[in-house]
Structure formats: structure tokens, C-alpha cells
Amino acid sequence: MQYLLMLYAEEAGWNRLTKAEQEKGVAAYKAYTEALSKAGVLKGSNRLQPSSAATTVRVANGKPQVLDGPYVESKEQIGGYYLIDVADLDAAISWASRCPGASHGVVEVRPSWQMPA
Amino acid sequence: MANAGVNCAAGERMSFPGGDAQARDDARETADAVARRSYGKLVAFLAARTREVAAAEDALSEAFATALADWPAKGCPANPEGWLLTVARRKVIDMHRGRRRHEIAAEQLRVLAEGLDAAAAKAEIPDQRLALMFACAHPAIEAGIRAPLILQVVLGLDAKRIASAFLTSPEAMGKRLVRAKDKIRLAGIPFRIPGREELPARLDTVLDAIYAAFAEGWIDAAGTDMARRDLAEEAIFVCRLVTELLPTAPEALGLLALMLYAEARRHARRNLRGEYVPLAEQDRALWDSQMIVEAEALLQRASDLGSIGRYQLEGALQSAHVHRCRTGHANWAEVVQLYDALLALSGSPVVAINRSLAIAEMHGARAALDALQEVAADARLADYQPYWAARAELLAKTGAHDEARQAYEIAIGLERDPSVRRFLQQRQSALPS
Image: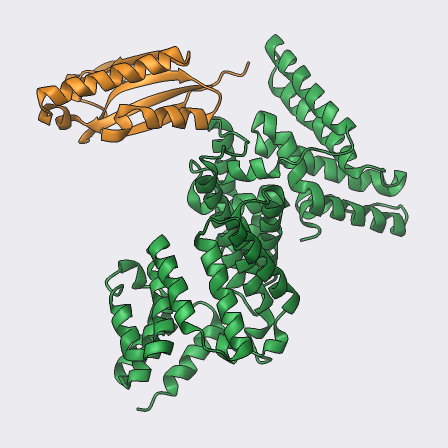
């Protein structure tokens, strides 16, 4: 099954880290991504720009409405994701708990919609 | 419990137009027996591959309904379990066929059918009830629905009965059960017994759910409410099952012992007028000594496994209470020690209350009130009846009658069991004014 691991964290947190701490953080994510890839479960991943770079779009009365900012204003925002393919929820939870994001934020595990085969 | 599966399975379809009354009774009896013995086993087996619990339940209901229609006329099959599985399997495959029409689905269907056929052909269906319970009590399932879910899928209790035991409406309970089953399927919660490292923590969630079911059933100790009384028995049945399938899990043995101790005293907890009788005043002739013997043996087995836990400690406390009441030998030091260990393990204010009552027996009410003061600030106690009842009891003993009266007042206001309420009212009015 495919699961999307969505990494939520306090956005201001990153800038409060020292340069050395930031480097350590990046290294931890790199190692984690490498481990997912070696295990053959990684389907895709990205780090996202902060929510200040977000734009929301909706169409109302046939006209697109474009707004500055994320959909939900909150201190904690999605900062990246991993799409993984594993056997079941336990395997997904096991990977999520090893994600550096689970230690400084929250990882939401969402199964992807399965098309009826 | 005996007819649980059939009742919920066949519902109102259990009428036999014509036919021989004896054959009907025999068929019903056999179906009841199979339901009790095998309902959960069949659900677990049908759902293990697909994780579709609701579909497995539906298929099995139809199979039971078919059985009740067929067996009186054609006689009960030699292997009723296998018969039901074969019919239910066909229903599951029909359901899949209805929904999925692609080539790949056909291949999946073939694999599914072969697996189920092979099992039905064997005399013994592999028991995957434990794996099913681990799925139901998975940490990803809302904690409050785990106990009802286990009762439903393992025993076949219907949502209406479960709702009445858990004091909610059948509609609300039904919705929450459906949502939980959807979660199992959609989130890909596995049907398996966790590995050695994970097992103790994951087993705790299963045991907690079983104990929650028991506690709900225990509230009505007089047994006036059938749904509730049965629930305690069901919880014991399910826990026994866990100890059979997982014989070296000390906490499962501890929980079974704990529940048997409590159940053994059920008839002594109320007098003939239905009034609440506290432990020290119970008629010990009314205790079920066979259950107590079993509980003692279970605790011994658990302790031989060399890993202590909450339920074993609570079981040991029950054992100490039974021993004291029977021999008249005051063992409060031992009791306080057990509470100390339990408090260290759980940090629960409820444990602290019981500990303070044991301290009262050893060092007097004043010392007990001091001990109770340590947890008095815990917000969870504000609406917890036993806290106020304990406080009232201790205050009365120190002669603080006005404060005791107030504490009784709060306890009475919080209690939902009328007989316990009457007991507290009697205590309150016995205070010197």
C-alpha cells in the first residue's frame, strides 16, 4: 500500500537553529531518505518552501480566486513529504517513527486512495 | 452469550415456516454452539486476507441465516464450522465479484478463493482471532471504541446490545463501529500478532479494551441489567481466549485472575434487598471458591514468568483482600506495598485513593487524609465518585462531620448506581449532627 508521510513542524523552529544544528538536521534527513531508498519503499519525496510562499486557489462563480498564504493558518505547517510503498500500516508507522520530522514535529500517515483493481 | 452470533446474524429471519419443531430446535442449538465457539474465528479467517471486517461479518450473517433455513430440513452437517465457512466464502466472493470486474480482480479472486477453499477443506480452521483482536485494539483505532469493536467482531454482539452496555445510543455506537472497521480496511491495519519487541505494549491495548468491557459490565453488580452482566462474562471469555492463544503473556494471566476475583464476589456485593455490601461485610459463603482457586493458580503462573505488570499487581491485591477476609489476619502492610508498586507503575490518582484507604487501616484516618491530599489537586478527581466517598469516609473517622457530610453529598451526586447511592446516603445520615 502507498502511504503519504506528511511532515508538520513549527516553521519558526528552523531559523532558531544554529548553522551547525541545521547542517545536522539536513544530514539526518539525507540519511533517512537514503534508508527509504535502499529499502526500496521510496516513491517520492520533497522538502517544501515555507507557508509564506504558499498560494491558495479556488474557483467561485467560474472565476479563480487567488489568495496569499496557506489553506490553514497555523503555527505548524507541512514542510515536506515522503510517499512510500509498504505492506501495511505497521510498516508505515515504523518508517514514520524513524523520520527526523517525528522528533521535532509531527508526521501524519495517510494511506493513498486505492483504485479498485 | 451463547446465541450472540446467531441473534445478530440472522435477526428476525429465524422463523421456520412449517418443518419439524425438534429439527428446528436442534438446528438452532447447533448454530448457537457454533456461534459461541467459532463466530470470531470465522470472522477473523474471512477478514484476515482482505482486512474487510464488515464484509466478513455480513457474509457470515448470511451464512448463519442460510444454516438456520437449511439445517432443520437437511440435518446438521458433520462439520458445521466448515459448512458455514464454505457458504460465507461464497458470499465474500460474490460481494467482490459484484464490485470488481477487471482482469486483475479476477486473479485476486482466484487466489482468495483457493486460500479459503483450502481452509474449508481442512477439519481445523486456523485460529486468527488474536490477530483480529490486535487489529481492533491497534493504537491507530480510537481508544474508546476498541472494547466494543472486540466484543462485536470476536463474539458477534450486535451494536444495539453493545450500545446499551456502554450507555450510548445504538445509532451512535453503530456509526463508530462502522468507522473503526473502515479505518482497519482503508489504513491497512494488519491482522497479525506483533513481534516480540512490540508485543507487550500492543498487548496492553488489547487487555485494556477487555478490562474496559469488564468494568462496564461490573457497574451493575446486582445483575439486574442483562446486557451489562453478560458483558463481564464476555470479557472473561475473551481474556481466557487470549491466555489460551498467548499462554506465556503474564499480564493476560494477571487480567484474567483479576476479573475472576471480582466475578467470584459478584453475588456477595448486594444483599437480598439489593443493597450494596462493602468487601469487609460480605458473606464469604457467597463467594465462588472455584473461581478464586483458578485466579490464584493464574497469578502463580503469571509470576513464574518473571515480568510484573499492572494487572498482576491488581490481581495480587485482590488475592490479599480475599486472604485477609478469609483468615482475619490483617495484611495491610502488604496491601500498601502492592499499591506503592502499582502507583509507581501507573501514576494513577485512582490507585492513590485506594492506597490511602489501606493506609487508614494501618495508621489511621488522619494519615490517610494526608496521603490523599497529595493527589487532591488532580483535576480528574473532581467528578470521580470514589474519591469523594473515600474522603467522606476518612473525614467522618476524624470527627470532621460537616466536611464529611459535604463530601458524601458530592459522592451521592456523582454515583449512577442507585444501590451504591443508597449506601452512601445511609452513611451520610448516620453522621452525628
